[in-house]
Image (cartoon, rainbow, N blue to C red; front, top):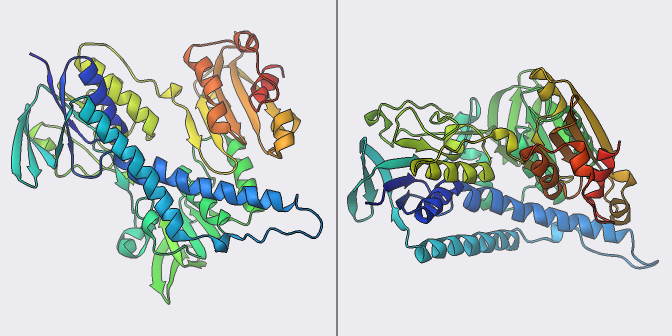
Length: 454
């Protein structure tokens, strides 16, 4: 008999697990109470990149203005854009991709049940559907329920009047001023978007630096770039209160200063709420970070797995996809493990930033002797001809044998370029191995070759 597997959640972890299980001969059933495709497709990666693309196009127009003939002008300004049309474009992209994914599941004959699942035992769930409760028995289960935007105090008290990375797409109009709470990836991407469309943007962060855990030079370069474009940072600042009056949202900081704007977006991380899943019936504990899972994606209960954001290991869609595949393969008897060190981390701001493996500080914290090399886009032919000279490529090696341990890139196309060093980190290539590759000219990737030769 094929293994019966219940998968709770249809985001990248859930749908990847289902597809792999079907391929391996199991009988997966996905339970989804929301839009198919999860946060990434509907309220995260895809719609946010649609917005950021609009910002990039505005930048392109600004670049063309400097190249207009004498006496000619380009009359375009960001305030000429239609927010309704921007939202429609984003919604169209989401709908196309979600429809394609749903059709793929129909083609693969993978069962999808619409409703809310709750465990009623170690091998059974009850699903609350529009037509009443449905019981499903299973051999194994994969919890891939995802997370929601977090609203820590004091923002929780004003949650209904603030926005977040889920609800921002439905704002009735483009604000002229925005406060972004949180200087992590989510906050900085939205800060970049709103700034590109002419809004006055202020970023408030509790920590003393942006991009906690990222390479210090990457963070400093991005912050400088943002500040040149008028984005204001309030770092190391704790918010003591939130006020809403006169059509403005006001953050009262602990030092007594006040920051006001038409909108305030809380991007202070994400949290899990698994209270409705009945995990107590399984003897499983959970907290706001989710359910703990090991490198095999297995929880403390042998036949229950947790993949994606819900296990708190790596909050990225592509990490979730790989975790879903690993959970599926291990359910079918493999011994696969997840290595967070191999996950490319991408930031889709302008300039883009990306990293993989260890940065210098992380490697040294592990007791490794390292050396680094760096090449700036300022000296790269394609970067110069395109006017995209901001940023650099940095490589981190083991000092003993020059095995690549990690890479950090900031600049145009960084999120594409990172896959070259990601392959090297995955397959433990040395500097000499990477230098043996031929890098096409002129390309942005030549910066990697230049860094190898430093």
